[in-house]
Image 1 (cartoon, rainbow, N blue to C red):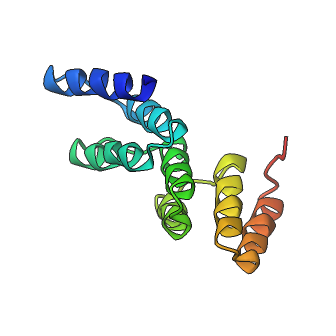
Image 2 (image 1 turned 180 degrees about the vertical axis):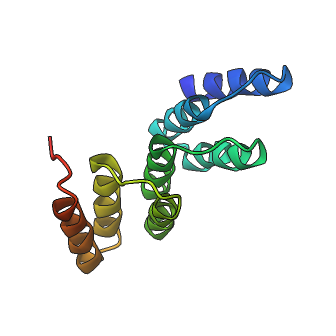
Image 3 (image 1 turned 30 degrees about the horizontal axis):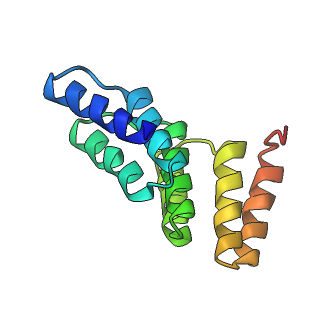
Length: 126
């Protein structure tokens, strides 16, 4: 599949010591996540740390989505906490994923909290 091709190209880039930035890592994560390969989608996050590449809001969103789609809804929310710990402002996508993760785990109280966060931050809904 296309996610396997993305992993192959990424491996070549690493082997050839090409510079990979947060966009590269986020795109790879999204490619794997969309193919329901959530475990593969999370590997680039570890490599980012090893290579001292700072994650972006999109990187965190891709990781949250991968965990949520893999049935690891609580891990998805842990990534959301890391997003906040990195002093990033949540966007509508990260908050939507957090709410969806709560729904997966039947944690409606926390889902309401995140929805309230969205309203307080005046995050645009579309």
